[in-house]
Length: 521
Image (cartoon, rainbow, N blue to C red; front, side, top):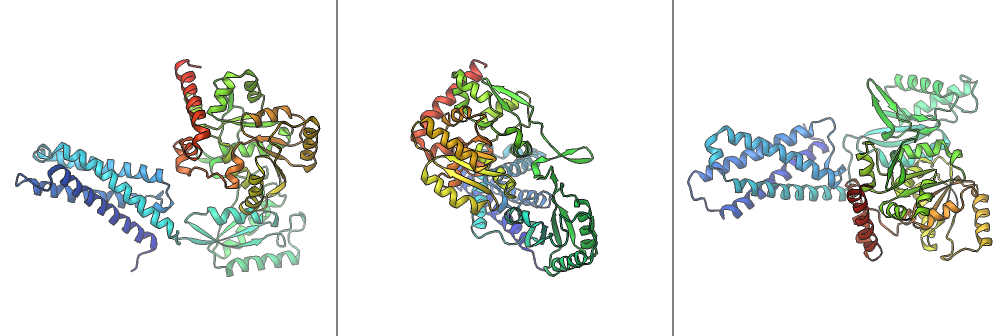
C-alpha cells in the first residue's frame, strides 16, 4: 500500500530532524571532546544518548503529526516553526534527563557542558534544517494534500467575492472546483413562487451540474437578509443530501459575512461576537477603541450611515507621543468617531489594563479586511492622497486583487497648502463621487488635521491610513505576517527607510517608554 503525499512529507520531516540531530551530536563531540574519548565507558554512554535522542525525537514528531490540529510545515510561518522546534526540543530533553537520572551512574558521568552544547546545537541545526525544508516545499508549491473538491453555490452579485476568497483561502483541506449561480433556481425577487415547474427544473439541473463536477462537498452562500433564505437552505440541503454531497453554509449577520475571528465559544454554543465598540482604554491621554480587525470592520460596515461626515484614526506610538505633547492634536484624536491602536506597545498597555483580548488594528490590516468585505459592491471607496505614481499603481493593483470593489475615484492633491477655493472644489468632488469610504493617505499628523478640518463637510466616512496607500500600490513591501505577530513590524519598516524613520523611532519610542514606565502616565 502506497503512502499519500502528506505521509511522505511527514516521513521526510522525520529524516530531516534525524539528520539535523546527528550533525548537532557530531558537532558537540567535536567541540567538547575533539573526537577523543579518554575513558572506555564514554563511547558507549554517548552513543546510547545519541540513539535515545533520535528515538525520543521520532516519538515526539509522530505524536504531533497525529494531532487533530497538525499543520504541515509548508503552511507554517517562521514564527510557528520556531515555536514548534522549541516545544519539541523541550520535551525531548525532559525525556533525556529523566532517562539519565533513572540511572544515577549515567547521570553522574554525563558531562553537563556536553549537555549544554547539545541543547544549543540541536536547536540551531533542527531550526535551520526545518526552515530550509519549508523553503523548498514553498518553492515547489503546495500540491494537493488530502484536498477534497468543493463547489460553490452563490447568487450572481456575490460570485466575484466568493471566487476570490475561496480560490485563495481554502488552505489544504479543499480545492474550489466550480461555482454555480442560484439566481435561476431560487430567484430572490420571486419570494412567493417556490415550486413552479421552471424553477423546479432549474434546481434539478443545478444539482446535476454539482454531481457532474465530481465534488464531495458544496459551499452555499445565502445572505441572511434574503426573504427566502430558510427555504433555499432547506431545499438545497435535502437535494444535495440525497446525492451524498456534504453542505457548508456561509454565515452572515445583517447581510455581512461572518469571518473566523468573530466566532466565540459560549459553553455548548458557538456564537457570533458582535461588538458594541463601547470599550475604551486611555494610553498617554488617547482614548483607544478596544477590539480586533474583523469586529472593527463589521462594526463600521453595519453602522456606516452613523459614520458619514466623521473620521476614523489609526494611532501608532509616534502619533500617540505627539498627541501627548500637543493638546490640539490630542483633541483631534479623541474627537474622532473611533481611534484604533496601530502599534504593539500600545496594545500591550491596553492588555495590561485588563483588556486581555485587545488586538492591534493597523491601518493596512483594516484596509485589507474592509476591501475583502466590500467585494460585494455594497459600499464604495475613494482614495485621496499620496503621489501620482502611487495612485497609478493603486488603479492597477486594487481591481486585480479585490475584484468587485466599487471604487469611485482616486485623487493625488498638490504637495502644498490648498487655497480655500481648491479645498471647496475637492469637497464637492468627493461628495459628487458618492463614496461611502474615503481613504486619506496624507501621512500623520497632516491627515488627522485634514480630516478634523473637514468633519461634517463630506458625506462619506474618512479613514486616515498613512502608508497604507503605498502597501497596496506595491512600492513599499509589508512585513511578513510572522514579523507582525511578534510586534516587530516597526523594525522591518526601519530597515526599508532608515533615513526617515530612525530619528522618529528612536525619539518616539524613548519618549513612550519614559512617559509610560517612568512617569507612569
